Image (tube, rainbow, N blue to C red; front, side, top):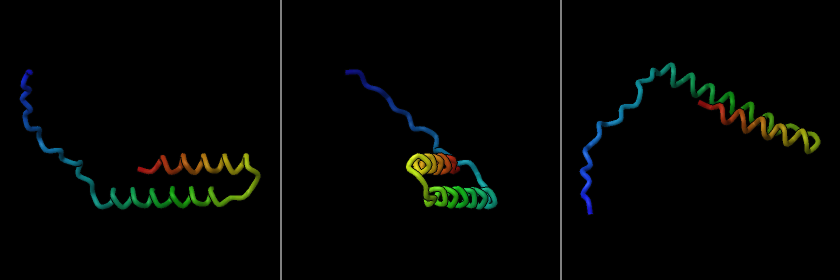
Length: 64
């Protein structure tokens, strides 16, 4: 059996973000979630409802 030497890695440093960037991302998340919820609440025939469900899923996927 061959021994493998595992060396320690440098600590991962998350990128520095300002409070404004964090706030902006949270506002975007909330707006996208609200838009997705409004789409899901829409009434209509099954074809439209399915399209709105897919649209809501796409909006949620866009969240930062």
